[in-house]
Every structure is written in C-alpha cells, then in structure tokens.
Length: 417
Ligand SMILES: [Zn+2]
Image (spheres, rainbow, N blue to C red):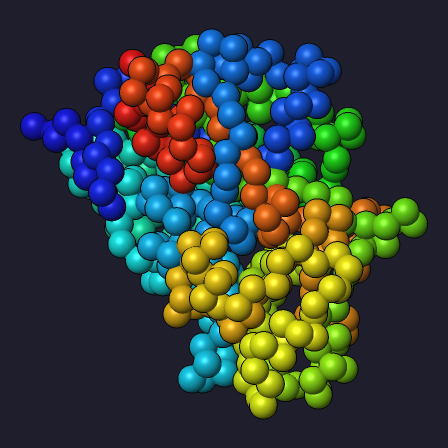
C-alpha cells in the first residue's frame, strides 16, 4: 500500500488524489505572460490566474537553470541542495568543477521520495544534462519515467522507464536549438497523462526562445500560444497544473545592439595585477551559443595576493553593478552553499551582464541577435501560477510570507483544497 504523504527537508507533501503537473518554463520571465495576456494568446493561463492562484515569486539567485530546477525539486534553497551554478572553483586543485551532474546534489528530491513511496512519477526535461540531475535517486522500477527530449530517440526502458518516446509524443526528434525541444516535453507529458495517469509530473523546458526573442516578437508569441494550448490540455485531462520558471530574462544590449558587458577578469587584472584573482562565470556550459557564457552573476576567487576587500574596493561605484558581496554576505543574503562560493560575488543590473576576459568569450553565436540573458537578482522574479485555488491555510501563508518559487510542489500538493 502506497504512503499517503512523504516528508523531505522539513516539509510533508501530501500524495495527490488526482495528477499534479508542475511545469518549469525555462527563462519564463513574467513579461512573457504579461504580454501574452495583453495580446489574448494565453487564454488557459488567464483562466488559471483568475480561478486558481497567481503571483510573482522569488527564484534562487544566481538565477540560472540548474540551481533553480534543483531548488524546485528539493523544495529548498541552494544552501541546502548545493547546486549554486554550473561551475565552482575547487581551490585545492585550481580546477573549475562542473556542477550539472547528480553527484554534487545534496540530499533527496521530492520526485525520488514519491517514487520510493509507491507513487508514479514522471520527469521530462529538454536537455539531457538536466535529466540526469532531476533523476537523482529516482527509482523507475515502479513505473516512473525520466527522459529528455534531447535524447528522446535513444530512450531505454532501463534508463528512462519508457522506450517509445518519439512515438509517444507523436513528434520527430527535435533539434537542440528549437522551440520544439520544449514543446516535445509537453506533448510527451500530455500523452503520458492520458495513457498512464501518473501521480506527479515535472516538466522542465528550455529557454532557447526567451534567449532569442523578446516577448513582443512573433516567435515568442507563437511559442507562448503553443505553451498555453498544452497547459489547457493538461488541465482538461484532469490534472492540477502549476506553472513557474527557473529564471527570467533581460535584454542586455545597447542601442546599437552590442552586448553591455563588464569584462570583470580584464578589469580586475588591470586593477590588481594580471591573474591575481580568478573570475568564474557559473552560467558557462556546453550550450553557450545563445548567451556567449555571459550572465548577470559571477564569482571571484582570490588566488593571489589580493584580499576580498581589495576586489570589493576595486569594484565600488562601478556603473552597471547591482551587488558586490563578500562570501559570507552572499551566502546569507542569497542562501548559498559556502563551500562552493567565491570570495566575492558580483551581480549586474538588469540591462548589463558580467563576463570574464573578453578574449575567452565566443560571441559568434549571437550574430544578428541582441544579447538576452539572466543570472542576477533582476532575473530572479518568476511566475507562480496554480490552476486551482489555494485553501485557507495557504492563502494565509501566501499573504504573509515572501513567496519562493521552490515552494511550488508544496503549494501544488498541500496548498489546494
Ligand atoms: Zn534556464
């Protein structure tokens, strides 16, 4: 007999009576829904907002994909789950360590706990690197499913819990840089909901569209209309739908279309001596074509003679910078794991991004496009929408506490009638 609830990190999650679907709209800045509502292209989301619950929540800073997805599926800040970016610097080896695998994720996930308790869980994401992290500890032997649209054509029963993903979605293998990579996730989720009625689904998209197109552009509108249609179908199949995002997105180019970049490594090399400190851009991964590894949040490690206070002094009053924090302050303010934090954290304003050394960033992938990216505090505001209304207890909580996006499973499972 399956358990009626699971407990994780101090929160008890009720096992749902009918399927619950949480969708993470990668890069889903609230501006896209705002524009979509104005243009009348997201009627299902409009209904959710009117009949259910809608707010703008605070996401995890740095406002990157992995930290926020891990916050959502663990129900905790990065200080607890440990994933504070794509990279941190191992000061003993001097090597940048990649954090996008499941190995560095601390503790269990809500998905794994539910599967362990006998629930059927579905986790589908766009990129396979995230699939591995989302699938940490997820036992598929009880009928749970975990795959990525990136590797949909290569699914196996043993590894993914499904082997006919292309047939299931009724779509060809999508291109890596396409809106179909996200739409495939939703389509497969809809079909699985129809076919198998799992208890809990987590569908996590990719932000290719939002990196490339502003909310007013036709491609973005087409994408949002398609998303809305899929959300409506999920609800029509009897699921409670919860929508949030890992982070927002801001245009960080100047009037001429050139990226507004502070090259922090170059700047600190000039101020403190070449190579005295090391700047790590934790947005960097294998898929940087649409952002050139430029984001709104970088870490500085003092590997030479300079002290954190020297770095902070060198950056005081610098235009375009929103926060320069020493490690202890950054960890306290943004709830970050101290053992993976730099000596100084630098966060840029909405219209500006920070990079390392100009020569180390390849911006050729941006050709012809304005730089739209994320990472800072200004991109940590995300939609938080439920298709069902809150119960009295959660209405009170929502009215009195700052709403964190990592509470989305809590709200979806415990917060409705
Ligand atoms: Zn993202």
